[in-house]
Image 1 (cartoon, rainbow, N blue to C red):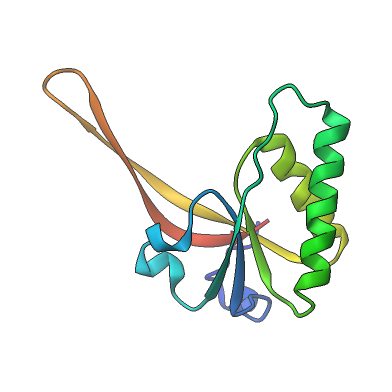
Image 2 (image 1 turned 90 degrees about the vertical axis):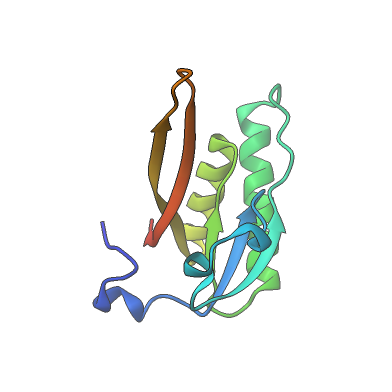
Length: 128
């Protein structure tokens, strides 16, 4: 799998990142934002009782709307409910769009009382 920070991949990465998640850019590290103008698109609320067909249709609809709205070669980041994200990424790929995922290192600190502090450190964007 190609990694975004590899030189031969850099030509495919666009300077605008469409962030489709419940994690607005205001909470991101400088490293994660580096090199992009980021546009936040809130991840839609997903009904846990919705049918698979309904989820797919909703994902395809949002992908088509964003494809029409952003007519240049932006990169898309999709993070949220798995089945919706799966269909969203598939549709964006079918539309010829670049999609990335954030890779993180999970840092766990074991505390004296048996609990854990868990943090995630952004490492890079990876094309999917």
